[in-house]
Image (cartoon, rainbow, N blue to C red; front, side):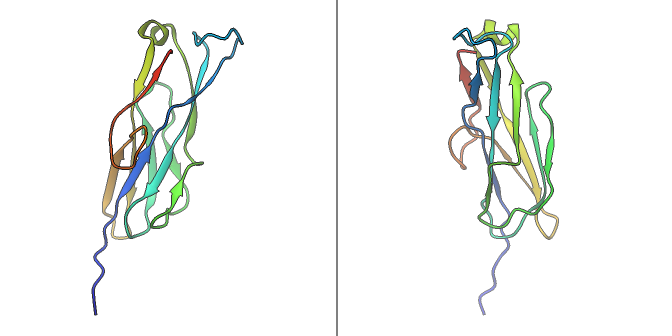
Amino acid sequence: ITPIVPRPAVALVKPQPDINDVNNNGITDVGDQLIYGFAVTNTGNVNLTTITFTDTLPGVFAGTRATPLQAGETDSTSFTFTYTLTAADVLLGAVTNSADVLARSPTNVQVRDTSDFATNTGSAPTVTIGA
C-alpha cells in the first residue's frame, strides 16, 4: 500500500482587466471602470473549502465561494469585481494591486496565495497601464 500524503495548495491569477470607457470618449480617464476577473485553482490533491478572496483596491469586496473547490478544479466565475478609476489613479498613470485567496483543507490546514497576473506560480502584482 502506498500512502497518499495530502498536499493542499491554491493559486490565484488576476489578469489584466477589461476597461469600460463609461463616457465613450476613447480615453481611459476618471470614472471609467476596470473589470477584473480572477481564476482560483486548487493546485493540491485534496478538496478545499472556506475559499475567501480579498483585494488591496479600496472598495473591493471580500468574497467567499460557497462550494468546495475540487482537487485540480479552476473557478474563474465566482470572483469578479469592477473598480472605478479615481483622479489619483489617472495622475499615476496606472493601477497596481494584488489579491489574496485563502482556503482550508479537509483537515483544516489553511493555504494561501497572492495573485499573479499570468501564472499559478508567481506573485507579481497586476499593473494596468493607461489608467
